[in-house]
Length: 231
Image (cartoon, rainbow, N blue to C red; front, side):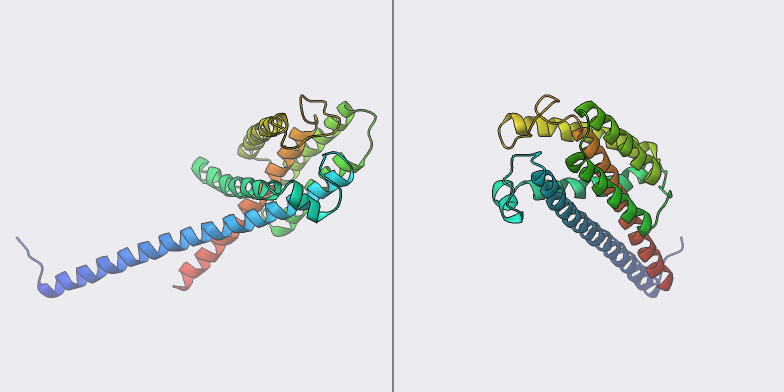
């Protein structure tokens, strides 16, 4: 039987060590990139929660004291961290589902489209707080149409639609439980303990954070590919 010489064994050993080192480095880079993406999504979610919650407070939709950012932190300090955590989970989940389904999302994959999606989402929230409608049914139907339009304009994926409905349902149920336990309240609730348009806001938020998460994942993929080609 052919046997390896000491020199060949040394070469094989070095090659194995180099392969393991490259693999460990790739795993470390992937973990670091995932953590960075999660942190960015968390900060974006916190910022949007502060801005949009302030709109709701100014319109007296919620019962937080309307004194600005200081009272938001003192009366509902847990809202921005919760929204940030949810945003990070949603933003990381969307590209993960795309990979599992083997359907990379390529529709309108550029930052300008993502920024327009964020602007429309903020506009939908602004409409829910500022625009006066004849009744809550008309408001809810209008926001529902706008939210579906947001998905159709910036997403159009079946996975995005399914995740949007599922997460919006869970978020609405969670909000119902929070209000039921007295953590905060909505003025003039018309859908059990909350407002009937709330699921539309959650759905639009899920689509928006999913779009941001997909774009961050695509940017990371491009950077890794360029680095691989350089090496």
